[in-house]
Image (cartoon, rainbow, N blue to C red):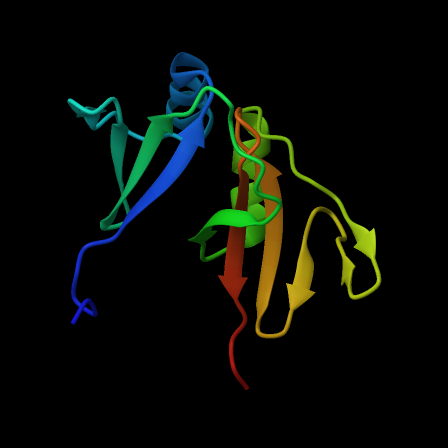
Length: 128
């Protein structure tokens, strides 16, 4: 029933101005507009990402959004130049090297937005 429905990812933000600066200046999103209910929306790769005000912020300790990229190393380099700071991990079963870890059939790298939401880049590895 919902297989063909458009999807909107909703991200809570404490400070809308700070969050917009991060998404527009650091990630390069084009402003989509403020909705009557207070959400600010962006069109991202054929989907919608909405920032919504939540004064108490978020407590999620998982990836909220993952962006598929063709070349993770190049994407990391470009985002670092715009001021994005990547996370590094060294846990049993999850170790990053130059911010990247291999998880099965993909490479992944994580960073936080200005509001503490965990975002991810992932690159699918070629089968074969």
